[in-house]
Image 1 (cartoon, one colour):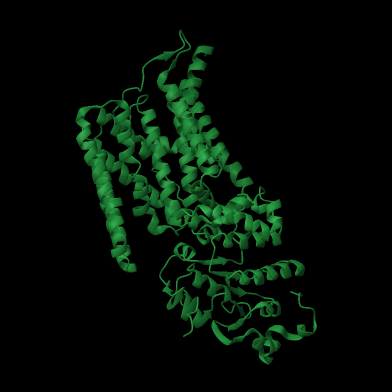
Image 2: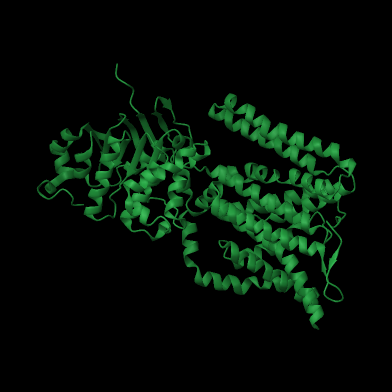
Amino acid sequence: MKAPPLLQATDLRVAYGKIEALYGVNLQVEPGSIVSVIGPNGAGKTTLLAALMGVLPLSGGRVEFAGRDVSKLSVEVRVAQGLSLVPERRELFGELSVEDNLRLGAFARLRRGERNAAGDLESIYARFPRLKDRRRQFAATLSGGERQMLAIGRALMARPKLLMLDEPSLGLAPLITREILHIVAELRDTGVAILLIEQNARAALQISDLGYVLETGEVALQGSATELANDPRVIESYLGLRSATPVAQT
Amino acid sequence: MNTDIALWMVQDGVVTGAIYGLMALALVLVFAVTRVIFVPQGEFVSMAGLTLGTLQLGQTPGTVYLLVGGGLLVAAVEMVQAARLGLLRQRLPRLILAWIILPVAMAMLVVWLAPHKLGSWVEMALTLGLIVPVGPMLYRIAYRPLANASVLVLFIVSMAVHYALTGIELAMFGGEGLRTNAISDWVLGSGSMKIGAQSIWVVSASVACMVVLWFFFERSLYGKALRATAINRVGARLVGISTDLAGRTAFLLAAAIGALSGLLMSPITTVYFDSGLMIGLKGFVGAILGGMVSYPLAVLGAVGVGLLESFSSFWASAYKETIVFTLLIPVLLWRSLTARHLVAEDEEE
């Protein structure tokens, strides 16, 4: 008997008014694995994560998380159950300090009365030493890479079982991108499952266990990350001639 | 004008300015967190003044019906929503406790204690207990269902809430004004330079309230959560701060600040059922001076409004309101010339 997946999306549908953005997407994430979703712009990748998080309402289908149907639950309740999203725009609290941003990341836990949440600050600082140097600065003063680290750190403060990352490398220099993806791979080893959306398909598939290719609101292909990386259609559309160029290129 | 009169007017201006300052704080708070321009803020002031006045006469204030009625309405709205989500059975016990049992218990306590005239402090505590819960109730009934509407729609709702509350106040307290007893009647100083105890109460309580708010926003988790919601609503939801919780807390604070202002002000001025609008609007002018975002500037602006009003009532008393509101025009012109980005942000939402 196999353990049930951590996240199971069944026939997921989302519509903006009358325009459907997702037509019946099925997706699974196993505990402790990294799953990548790749695909062209406008395929509905960001919509998919927003729908899984509850930021966007579903027009059909359902989301099960940790064995519970969470389709009707609010964003806040999903956060409390261990689902976290680092959105494309980071959505930090610019006029609060780095440390306050992190502390608020544990809001759901602190509200439940978990007093040890403050101790997690140190482990976040250990993972992102640069945030420690800047702990008293306003989040708005950080560089792009630091902002992404803060966004990930803030999400980790909630101790998620599943961390969803929307384009973590967007707007970052190749070196920082590699650093961030390296940290993502490390997080998996601490037991956090990751659902990753990434423009840099090659780098994403390199650290992933499974991959999905999303095209115009539907899953076009799915398989293990190595299968996808060697699939001729994927190579042509998403990896392209870059297969000859160095990995970190974005 | 001689120095004595000037000093007296400064004192008068600072005392009313302190009340306007509290209004301005509440308005900035509610706007930052919920984007609601809370026109009825002053209604908490008049309601608190009239409730305290009625209690001091040994009668039961009409506010008990407002509290119980509001509670029942919220309970009904919440039950319908819970039933739609299929969570009625889980939520029912808490709903009944929070919105029916507690308000009824508070109302019964007031009905029981009112005829005994237990003195200023008890009566003030009862007044706060009756009025503060009305804040979150208003949020739940009038604003929460429209939480994603535009600033303009929310403003129109505020106008409606203002008229509704003024009407309810007329029904509860009648058209007669009330003035409450001063907390203490000693006078500081002598001769021409006298400072009434109530003035000192007003200013020191306002300052204390501002210090408490400062600590709340700088030090406490919930204060930080409110600021986070004001800065980035999406980010706040993603860390588990619900818009609903933030809205309720903001309205709770606004009602508490309003009710406290009413307790402080009612011994100085006679309060009528419709006194609230003017007090709220003066605070609003102060808040505008602070750009609706800065707390210290809003308070300074409001104290400035108090001083301006005090001096203009000496030189041109017929025009005192005109002068205060005319001040808005140059300020708004200057603001709209310097703060383009605020408009852009608003359109984005």
